[in-house]
Image 1: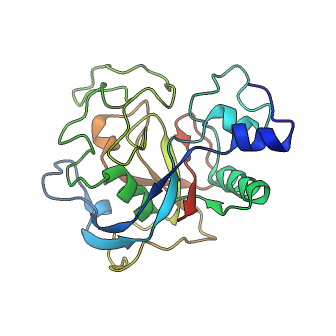
Image 2: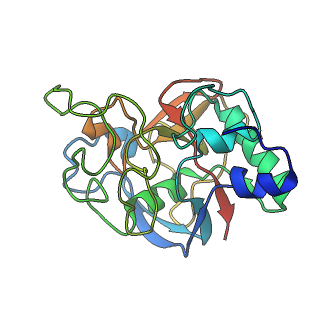
Image 3: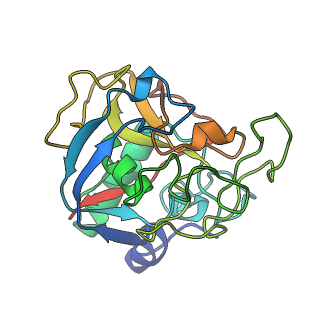
Length: 240
């Protein structure tokens, strides 16, 4: 895909397809039956998420090239973009906002988990176990190599019950929140607020080179906000 060269192309090629989510209450964190849970996802707490929109897919290489034309030359346009820092992702959101008049941003951690769970209370949106039929990951829990060993096009796997793809696997995704080591003190009545100015930022979802346990809905980790890796991308959100 070539770089976007007109305003019309910005709307056609750069703006991700969005899915409206009505919001609601859910239990956030490592629920009972999650055998790989650790204290980073505890205590479980009830969160109320307001209506919002979320990208149907992670931002793709092709979409990102509308801002940075020479990004990842030779990579397929329908792969999720990687080697983008949290700041890079926020610049892309700000650029979309400026050119569309809509308020694009990174999702909060609570919005991300709400979207990933899609009404489920199992470790994965597809149930208690996940297989390469459901998501892109590389290793089985016994260490056997069972996945593709690379990113896959964002439409390769079925959507969850909310119509969203690739929240499990393919690439980890930056969230808006600064990292906290657990949920002690987390809000019981609202999504975790966006935190600016802190170096460690939350990532979610797991990636193409991960074990299944790192793809769970409750799994969370953090990276320095200036990190660029071949398994970390992002997804955009908008207020409902």
